[in-house]
Image (tube, rainbow, N blue to C red; front, top):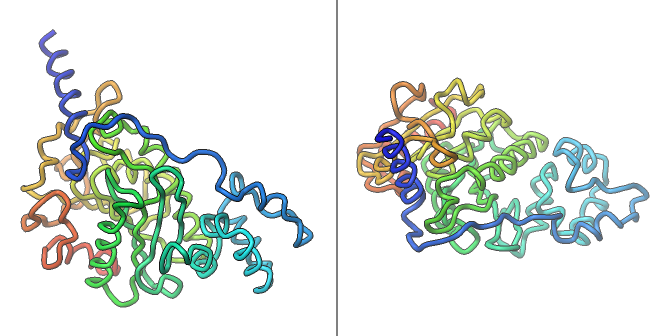
Length: 324
């Protein structure tokens, strides 16, 4: 009985603590945008090219890329003009067309879905000609309204990395909001992992290099679940509550797995357990996990792993540029 009480208390503590410092207000369960992309019905009804357009729900990124590769420039841009919401969010569409379709949302935006709290992805650097590509996957309390922080991290990593590196800030999943059950469970991370895997498949279909994933806090849960289904060259987790895996082998990935945790990060107070669906498992920086541990002693807080001048950002830049 004592052992059961201890386990239950640990699970409750995990539920209270896992997440980001940005949202300490109580929150209930949140829902990811569901159903087809806005504009899908008009897209599927469009027969102006004399052929069916790929179904955004079922077509793979490779199939989408092949379809667009067979179109003339004029046909491609007509689809951008007539169906921007679909073209701008469809993985496998050439990068330049996604930028054009999402232009009202900002520069070099690769995805934009305003439904609910919103989803967005934005590139920094010359993505189309990059030798190295990185994707930053943020943790809780990040959506369109709070995306600036993730975008700044991408800019800081790009500034520190080699000139042939492009960095994508990817808020492409519905993150947990505030303190609630979503912080301590894998429900939103499972949906996020599917979206992340499809997004990286889209990068591959567009002919881009295998990306390095930089996964913060709850984002590391997303990356852990996505690991078997993405072609990432590297998976870097920081401030992680766990990756829903006991060790690197259980991630079932060929990627090099790296982990960083500051001694001043409050995430250290979160028990590394997974009990009754609560918690996210082993600490990726623990010796038995098998990740390569990065320096983080000069990182001042949970949300500051990309702070300019830290040894952690220096290491991140070396990984992003293929130098580690």
